[in-house]
Image (cartoon, rainbow, N blue to C red; front, side):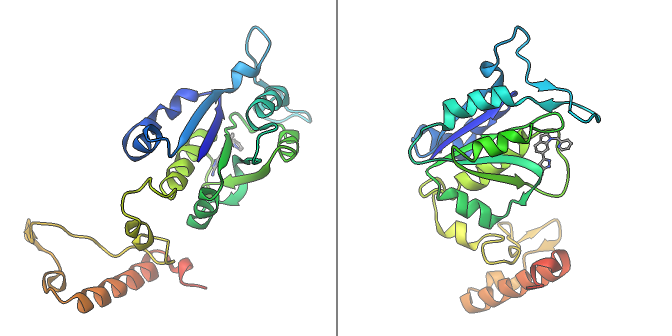
Length: 229
Ligand code: JCE
């Protein structure tokens, strides 16, 4: 999978080199390239922002650098990329979104800052690829970078071969619409706290039913919204 990221803080993405995704990058499974939006400016100050028409607090990202960056990175490429802009006003990012996006051969992420990006950029981008405005959650970040890091991690680990054991992908939280069951490892007693005896019983059927009950109980307590439908 090819992933391009456009940001005014490209070094934030240096952290992708560590652990799981770093290995996937070395092996070529994930080809992630980060671009500095300021490289697409032409003025001495490498300006990417300006005051909003109609007034209001803060600054807005100018469309011109975005147009040049998108032409360079997403223009005329085959297949057409999916172009993702994180936004608090976007559709919610879920495990289903991660699954969908993990099927795309080429993703382009545009990271906004300030109060956001000139709206015309999204319309222009839709001439180059499929545009998705996506929100990580119902809270406001200072920019798109942290949201894109989270999305790349969630999407990247679903690309075949990136995570060693494919079974660990289907068993975990949200793939079956329930929270995960609790996990324990040795020692069997730690600081007077015992591992649930059923897990030491060797009775695989009993273990499976206990884990399913735990999943349902925790989901009811912590995330009743997941059980509603
Ligand atoms: C962003 C900002 C709107 C004021 C670009 C925030 C996504 N789930 C999310 N929470 N926050 C974001 C996000 C994504 C991109 C940008 N801002 C800050 N946005 C109103 C300030 C700018």
